[in-house]
Amino acid sequence: MDDGSIDVKRAARDAAYAMPLADINPVDPEPFRTDTWGPYFERLRAEDPVHWSVDKDEEVGGYWSVTKWNDIMAVDTNHEAFSSEPTIVLPDPAEDFTLPMFIAMDPPKHDVQRKTVSPIVAGPNLAKLEPIIRERAAVILDACPIGEEFDWVDKVSIELTTMTLATLFDFPWEDRRKLTRWSDVATAAPDSGIFSTTDPEGAENERRAELFECVDYFMRLWNERVNAPPASDLISMLAHGEATRHMDRMEYLGNLILLIVGGNDTTRNTITGSVLALHQNPDQDRKLRDNPELIPSMVSETIRWQTPLAYMRRSATRDIELGGKTIKAGDKVAMWYVSGNRDEEVIERPNDYIIDRERARQHLSFGFGIHRCVGNRLAELQLKVIWEEILKRFPKIEVVGPPRRVNSSFVKGYETLPVVIPTRL
Image (cartoon, rainbow, N blue to C red; front, top):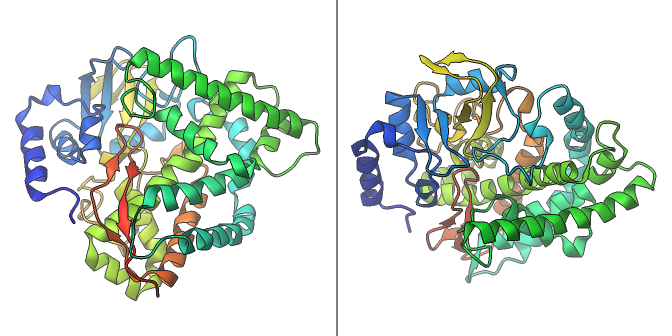
């Protein structure tokens, strides 16, 4: 089974090059859902690397797409000219439902809030987490059926990352799948299928209701932790942190959503992406199984190849020139990491999946500058451990049907991936 025939890929490329350049609108989720996004960015990198679009969604409107590696780096490392406020996604926040979070803040507030939670993903704590993650990975994989079709996303990717996230929060174990649900609700489009309606207003009302349930649940945990001695879980860190202990309810919810999505969605989609990538590239699968020491390099290559968050938004604080274009103060700017990770001028054979690639960690998926992903080492650790445990157990994982992809241009991920594991070692 090959995900995406040659004919489909050729038709997508023809469509991308046939349309007027000005009509290319990268925030359209459809090419991501159908995995046909590549030619649109290929054309933009070649013909208009700093590209102005106007989206029909009034919450998005006009925005700049930055698609080449060096231009993305110029934006990502210049927080003085390109602000993270008020949000990291292209749709503007609703005036009556804003969710402040430290990734969407500028210094100094960003720095002190990030510093509050960063110890949980620092080296000493990761060393403590590794055996826990390994034990859970073993239990999850040993429960996988042999010779029967199952959904890898639900059975493995979601389960491992949700277990890890529950540990970081010291979240009630029996309710851990609530974290998965809240992560999905926070980022889902109205027509994603997870709401009871596809009507945008109705879906938004459902989203808000569920996120209020999320913050109410976490408020109970906050009240328990704030009245107890400081501990090493995320909620206790926030409750006792000098920079976070006085957050209001919406800022608490904003930071919870950041930590839940950042700790759940991105890693689970890269775990799934690794299975798909190795299935689509059997030579690389053989290489990995012959040389398990390539796992760390394979992990980094998968993170580049998958790019689990396709873009991040910034807002220009002043008029500034980039790539020969003048970006005006207040303009929205999308850094398309998914495109920068395919930049032919920086990465050799960028569309190929090469697990022993030189400088495999040279990718944009974690961002750069002050907003570089705080949990990047934890993401790499979970991927490393799950593959070390896979190689001990399964000589092959067969993908037996196309994945169903998330209908989003922000979260680049998978809803399902049907697989069969033929035998155990």
